[in-house]
Length: 278
Image (cartoon, rainbow, N blue to C red; front, side, top):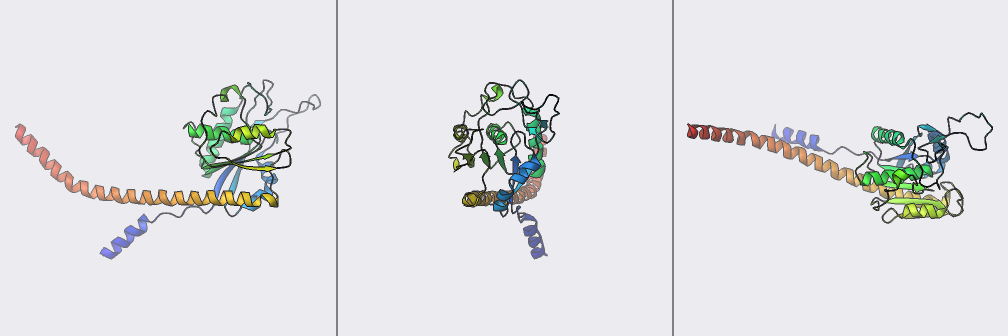
């Protein structure tokens, strides 16, 4: 009976095996959407499939028609934005001192997806990378439920919206991979370098091209090594968490058992005190 009880206790306290892959929340760029971003990252997803799964989400706001569109052109519902930083309700990465229209709605959305999907890391491209930088800063200050273990930012930049100007004051401590093109004319590399500088010890991956997230054979090893290392740290942290939880349960059980016997003694002491007061 004693052996059976011990075996049952050992079985109940055995840590649950953690998931074998990372879940990474992937945030698309301006005038993109989750499905389109997923399609564009097909090669990257194949590279890292052994270590990570990307969770794609579409921004809640529909971007207005392009400035050179014909009058009366209806907005394309597949072209989305996380927020708008110009008074005319559009977005431009290089714009400064503008609004952040719709930012709070997007924040609530990604917080919900993060929780529902059980994500552990962030990946963003262009406006999505800008958003990732803001989320990392918010997390470091305890102002969001999103707690990323790492971040990947491609063609990123610091937000120039007025409400975000107090961000970036303290370097983000989590591991990060920053990717940018030497010939990017939409988000010049200086802007991506400035965002990378807001992270402690950022890892940099450059490519000779323009405004895209590269996934050629030459970049495979960098991605594989980064995500493999992140998965290793994630699993080790889960093992420690599970072991700590198991020990806590055992301590609680022992404490409850002990407190029962001590409780009788204390109760008797209280009666003695009452007798003395009489």
